Length: 456
View 1: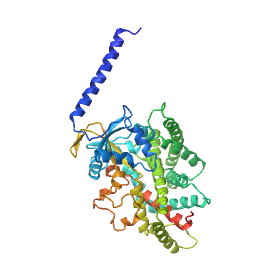
View 2: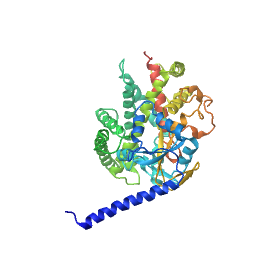
View 3: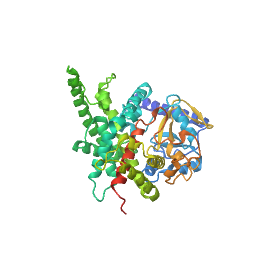
View 4: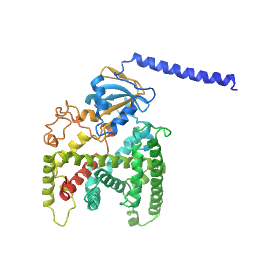
């Protein structure tokens, strides 16, 4: 039989919990919250959001609520009340006030799988420093002088192995994963990279799930895959650390020059003294960023082009002209070739706008935030939807049509704001690999259009 003291303690805790919940809900009722629907208890509208984003057309989740409540609305997803913004000015306000009014905060399904030391979850001065480091490995100069040759070589190597029929999405994922592993850790394609990629497929599937292993087999598989990926990366980190210590102990300057100058080398050789766990989390998340998003954009670019024959023909003509100027024995692209692809950049922009590989960003209000006559309570999540802005007729004429020509004179935009087009986010958390992604897609399209013809 339980003691009266224990029962009284339990009753007191439960009473206090519901009292605090009542006070919190009473406070929220006094605030002018954005209109919306919190859905079912605990899970809110999470299931509707997940099911929408597993289709080819996830827009209805936002479209239906914008039509009903307006461009700023309240919902409840991934266990938390969340304010969605489908408006350009509000999105800009959220991005510009990073670290002041808002801080980065993602659903636990994403943060648990990426790891607490990933760039996405870093804050303050550490994030600023590591973001700068990441950009230093993916800027135009580095791409031109060090990465372009590998990008070109690995894309051609993969395409040379293609048969008459391929599953393009799978091949694109293979290409981008091999590129990411090469750029971050200097590994060439092989059995190790392919086995690691298969675990990544399972890991990524768990991002937008309910993060309870008992109730979600997808999330449970993702957690197991995450452990395998971390174990594989930990082994590489330990081996490289040992290798670098041996190299640095040698007196011969030429021996020291052999040290690999990649992201892993920079993390190990810096002054921060990162642990193996911190480096593994950092690399794991960068591999996700460089792999999943770019492969998706490659696949959708081909889809949009094959549905728009005039665009495909003009793109092919541009790349045939580039190839015609080159030595017949050389297919390799140079930086000057990349800078001679004006229509390709229009295709890249339009694919990014229409595909929205980064559909938006999550933030958390650090204090009560007043905007557009509403109050976002402290602690609430916000989601700035780039997808909604890119597909808004007020910002782009015929917004849901693939029209690369709109970018030739920016004639397809009805606003002069530079912030209307944010395929890689913005503010201090602008995707550090944005230029690298554009180059990889451009090189991919070059070899695709000059090597293969479309077969119906």
